[in-house]
Image 1 (spheres, rainbow, N blue to C red):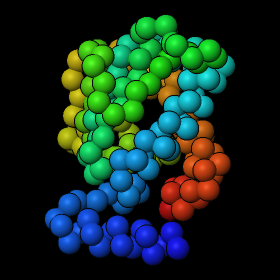
Image 2 (image 1 turned 90 degrees about the vertical axis):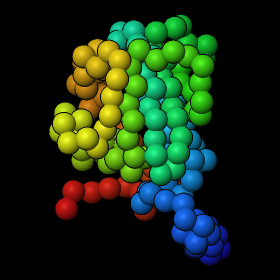
Image 3 (image 1 turned 45 degrees about the vertical axis):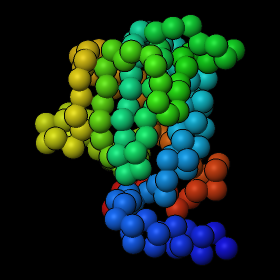
Length: 165
C-alpha cells in the first residue's frame, strides 16, 4: 500500500512541475527523520555536551523538499536530558551561522559521504555568518555519522540507508 501511495505522490509532484529529491518524499518525512536523529544526538552524553560548547544557533535551509531546521546550542535547552534544542520549520531565532543545501546533500553528509569543505568550495552548500565556529563542530558531528543510519533503521527506513559503493 505504501508503494502505491508513494507512486501517486511521485506522479503528482512530477506532473505539477515540482522538483523532488532522491531521499525525501516531502518535508514532513524529512522532519520526522531529523526529529528522531537530532533528539538522539542532543541527548547523547558524548556528542551532546561537545556540541553545546559551540554556543551557536545554526539554521539549515534545505531544498527538495523546502524545509528549515534550526539548532540552538546557545540557549539553555527546555527539555531535560538534552544538550541543545532544535526547531523543525521556520523559527524566529537569529542564527549565528546558516547553511543552504539540498536535503539530499544533507542526507549524504550525515552518512559521511560528503566532504563539507569541498561542498562549500564547489557551491553545493552555501553558508553565511560565523562559519569558522561551525567548522569547529566538524570533529564533533563526525561522531554522529554512525547514529544517522541507526536512526533510519529504527524507523524502518532501511531503504534510505546509504552504503559506500
